[in-house]
Length: 165
Image (tube, rainbow, N blue to C red; front, side, top):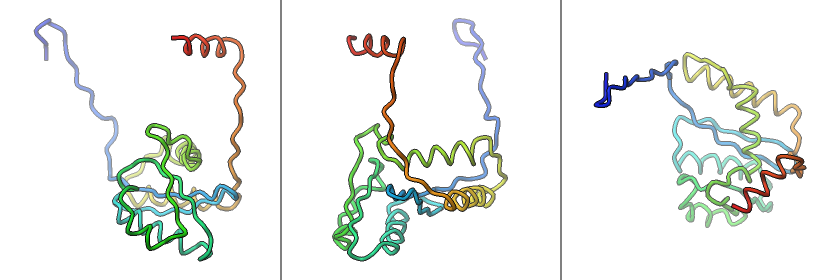
């Protein structure tokens, strides 16, 4: 196909076939590094609150639970559920700052170690791959530590230049 300017337009085809998707909810206990997960077909508020029911059930009744969430719509408008669980407190990261949420580090590890390059023929195979990773990870959980990154040389100069612009 050609445009009015005579340039050829090429369509890019996907190089893989999607066999469906799954949703993964995860809760990281920052003090221990333990992760609780739930794999669901859908990513609605209903499934999110069912996952939260599981998290609450696993905690001591008097334990305060502070849950850090991104601003995804599924996490919003949970006032009725929160009123029924006065020990649970939701805290939202600023928009485009989900990297502040440490469970995102865990999602990155999952992506690199279990999902990158993975090719499955069904959501069942995908579920098994995720569950296998979660099982192995649970054997030796460790808390994540924030580290101050030292900026040197050209990185420092570029940072200063960017701050001035």
